[in-house]
Length: 169
Image (cartoon, rainbow, N blue to C red; front, side, top):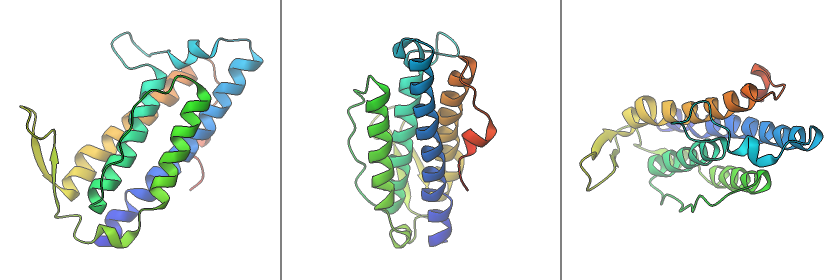
């Protein structure tokens, strides 16, 4: 199960984040071409109680790094979440992809049965096996934020489609 846990996580994160990086570059170019304030897109939401685009991208990157690190038995990289521009989000996505490139399949030895502790020391503390963490929590969370970022941009007129969302596989 070592390599399958890796295969079901790191390459998937890399594919989707690379696609998201390309979509964000398209959004930046679209805003410039149409004379749209970048912040109008970066702060756009699907509904008032949802995170804006900028936070959706930050959280997607956080999940990719956090899930991979926890399953690999590595330290979760710290992230400040201070990005405010398309360029800063591009740097965040590049750094996340670089981090993922440093994760090796061998690090996932016994990761399916590794205990993952979420929100330690809080009333929401939860213990999951690595397999449950990836399949039932991590991947759904990651895809929610990537999909929401895509939907925000599509809703705001960016001419993208399923191929843009999927990227290269």
